[in-house]
Length: 211
Image (cartoon, rainbow, N blue to C red; front, side):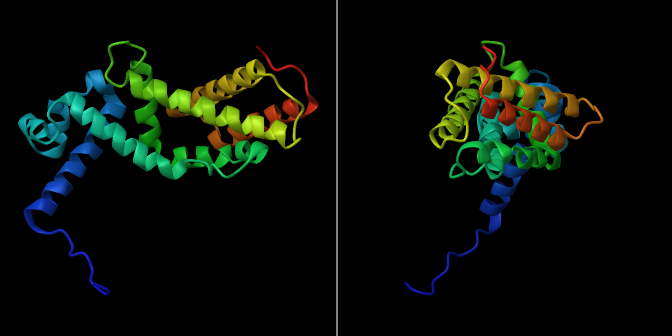
């Protein structure tokens, strides 16, 4: 009926939701610091003030907890996603904003970089998740570079040139993010913006991209 509102969740159910959220948040910190392999259920449980059995009760297994952590990471980093409606070169110019988000949400970046490094092991439970993140990013950013060609912002590029340039761009961003996490005294957003400007200049002048 009009004017009705959904009652707030209270009591034991609400406390259960809050405890689950706290476990996921703590697990994100532990996995970011120690990795999935090094971060044990006991480490996480001690920080939460619970027992490993409680974590199993909520998530079924350590892999189940990791799945919840990655789901939460996806939801939180969704706020940093550059607008898909932004076309062509304007999309790349906004990458400074993406790096600003990382600077203000260090834990999320640390979690991704740590898990991504571990996921080079074929048996790692997050391997498929990390692989898909890179596949999706490559497809999206390649599409934006194709839009720049379609809109006449830059001369034509072959599919191989586009893929090579986007992979190099991803590698530069990952490398700068890793250096920043390791304590390098760098302006992460500024360096990324500089590299993007240089890439745009190269695309506009039309020399063959490295392949």
